[in-house]
Length: 430
Image 1 (tube, rainbow, N blue to C red):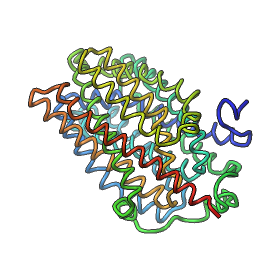
Image 2: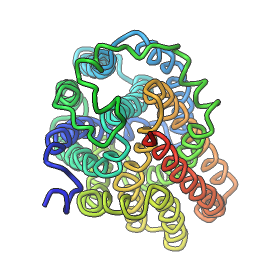
Image 3: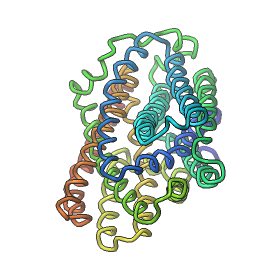
């Protein structure tokens, strides 16, 4: 029954459940705080948010060499734990500032929190997926990365639900300690995932013989700048970077459209936090059914190329509908569809791309792509959307940009899917 419904063997159930719980803790923490991040960022208007995106991109560029140095010098579980511990302690610091020095809190500190959270968001999810790409084989990733992502979806539903219920009665600052506790639990599940009994029967010979003790005894090594060089020297990694740039440009178009509609509806901080939390909760529900029932079978039957091309097509159709009707309901439908396909289908397929690269690239190159390259796409999308708005083109102008980008995006996804298949075959060959 497990094999038929979920593409799982009996010995894979435990690591999949632990990985799902790991992702649940991360996404609950993120989505608990994201409405507060968005509400604080809007305090000085939409234009200020565009420049906060630039600050976030610069911050991720500065942090990448530090993370690369940690990967080179420390064992896997140690640099993973250090990353999550740093962000948890930062949350405690923000909470202490809000509680004991409220007079020091103003628009500037809200901007700092916005940039910090944006870096936090990228790094904690990047480290999670990097560990999964290192822990499981390519064949396993295709079968159950989507099932593991269900844990994240449940967290993405639970986090906004808590935010919408607690933001006004308790105040936004009190959510920070809860998020810090969730990160501590994420550290515990990361250790459990690594030390649980290995199950890589379908991986390479080296993976089959590896034990948790052997894997953890070896430091990855290399240069702190290896991730930068790898992305620009490998067409495969550069293709992943290009795919993510276009994806984030599209997501940023949706994001600013939502901010503008919310800003027009309410102007109170706690009310905005609650409304944004409610939107996040409802747009997550559509993701769950796709992840639980279909994604693993879709990737297995139609391949990564199809899974990666689905999101560009769905996004283009959604923007056409939003341009025609322009209502809040259509926006929610666009977000629900975009996130359902992105998190339920495209994200598991995209993360499977990393299972066929070297161990150093899984952490260093992936960190560069999933943080700086990701935020660079945000900056491009934010400035493009702002320019179109200043020119008075609004949604119609966005559609004229979205459609050709979607064609390039889909073509790149098909190429990456086929390239991953070729690499998998080469690694499996005797």
